Length: 155
Image (cartoon, rainbow, N blue to C red):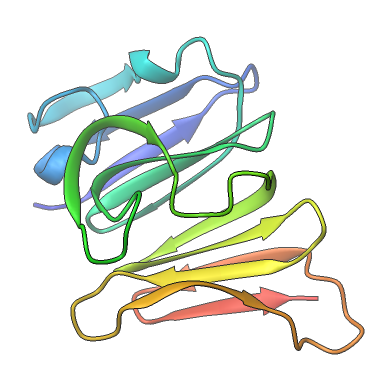
């Protein structure tokens, strides 16, 4: 079974369990976890949002930084790595902070502090560098949702 689960507590702690394939649980290994286990690498970072996809996971800190782990491109779309621990995402502009994140299969999207949507893909069949989606009319992006091959935007 390849399923994994993330849980976020009311005080900003992240737990994960089940399949550790590709390091997607964030515990520094690829072991199966039967019970929820605190992701110790994030224990001192207040987290406000989490998301996961079949091969990876991500967390958004209270300060607007994005952390990723599992099979993911964290610094370049052509450099997909298996990150066993949560790692600060550096593929996006460093001067930005974010308020929403979502993961799909081989892609990720965020909303920054200016309500701009950023999306990128590292899937071998459709690689795309981080791109700011500017033409959403006069609407303001408020939420994102991703599935295996799509990302939806709520304005």
